[in-house]
Image 1 (tube, rainbow, N blue to C red):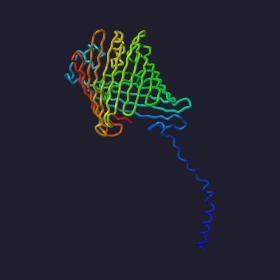
Image 2: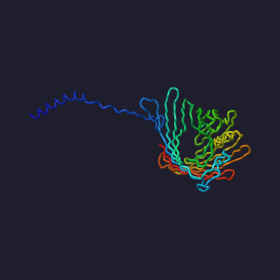
Image 3: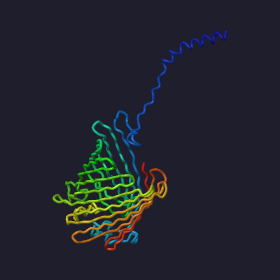
Length: 372
């Protein structure tokens, strides 16, 4: 009897199962709302319904720079000794010999889009800084659109110029080396000529170099890379006023001597274009109009001491002539970087500068930085 009841119940349940199962809710398949864009490198991702891949990354930097160690702390200085020869006459304002420090955050926004017309890249750098004098500031670094064609890319916006001379390997460059080049509004193009050869040309805002307002500088460069050696030459025409131009030329070579040692050397010459050899752009318009000439030599080496420790040593010599007045400065700078994990750096950097009037400047900096 019991077996008969069980059999009837089982049959009834089996008959009812299809109808009951049809009434159950269907679980939706998971959807990937964010997809990685491996074609553009690590960190890029694609949003739903968009052809554009974006990358968001950043950096936090805390930096301390000592007072001039050749003088007493908090000493009242009649004039600061310039580490930059283009200042010629030091500022007469009273200056106290104290330290400086800041904390700065960086946000980098990048996008990449492949279209039938060209590949389109955008880049924006935003910064926020808190200084030791209890002031803060918000700024913009590079910001540009770059169009990539088969062998040519065109950049429109603000970033470093085509004229990009060797500036050493020191992580901070507390007192040097002195080197030229500025970030500027520009339209520039770079062509891959094959066999390691690239050519670049740009039209840039001359005001960024201490030149005329609403006028243009012209820059060109040719670079060659083969194996462990790379070399570049640059030329620039600088509108120091609305009617006249100066010029600058530079060359550099770098070589990987071993897997852990790199060396580099650069030289530059300028005539009425001192900012291109490291001259202070706040003084450049005045000195360039006087027919100032100058040259700059920079040499450096970088050493990988271990998987986590890197050291660098740089030296530079800069000389200028302004209406018969000669000035020069020699700098030596070194740094040690400890990077225990990816993105994290502990830095010690310092150096000595001596000018042609036997004035000296010695400072040391420390930095903790994390990039993500």
